[in-house]
Image 1 (cartoon, rainbow, N blue to C red):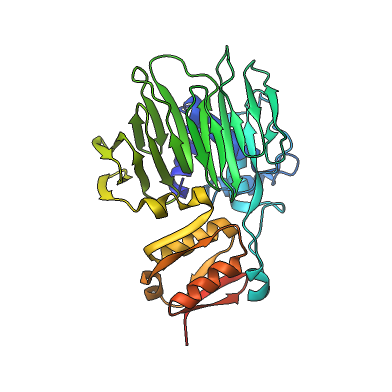
Image 2 (cartoon, helix red, strand yellow):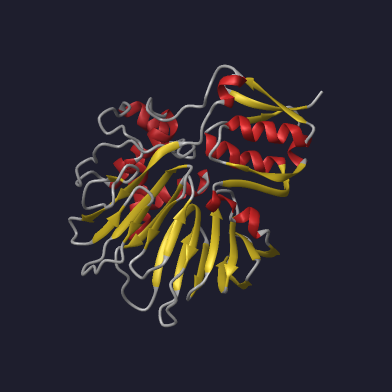
Length: 365
């Protein structure tokens, strides 16, 4: 979700026009701020209210919620204040020398489950066990998976957020599997009812949908809705476009009152203005499921966008023309940042230097 859409969602929350899923997303942002006991002053909050388009928090370290009687506007403004002023516990970009930056490992900031009616659960270190929630639902949890295929008599919305560079998979009540990449979240009912199945996602998620011809499966992300009855597809909603890639079967994608059908190997790029259908490079789209960074004739700007997200580092450019360079190759995202930078340096006319805690991309001399 980009800054402008985050701002719009906060405005809907204040106005009381959010759906249950959207409310869960906003409240999960609050959970990720870890500042319930250390709020800014009233004056600071008022200043932050006018600057709600600042970047969303990426680290989840919350300990408790405000009382449930807190006003919706207070939560939204508090979230805005956190976005603007930051928090001392939020991960900061690495500083000092390039050698120190090179030793950076992929982000490991945890996986968290917001149950809304109960405590937030840290799943990162969970041993295999069955969890029973206050709403009566249950799931089996481990450090890599969360499984809702237990028989749940009641249904409520849960939100799962992955803040680590290793994928985390949730198996929904109908048997559908959703794998989340770093900086991604999914909101879903603990049990599906009615004539359809529906979830909301941010970031990147890979779905393996359980077949049910009588109940279509719908995924909402920003203005885009993806619908099918049982296929496999990848959704990348990190950037301004939503990229939906069909890996198996067929699915429909709808945005801006336009609908298109995807077949295996096709990709839809959707925005509020419409949809463009392209042929997809399935290897590079799904590389993250194997913990790889694969680039087939890919722009350097796009490659380093992914690298920055995985390692929590920021890149700046000596000249914009370097962004247009294209690279081929593959490197493990389990290794140090040095492995990625060295690979790119060896295969193209670029080098990297550290400047004020960021990595500058320069033309190789």
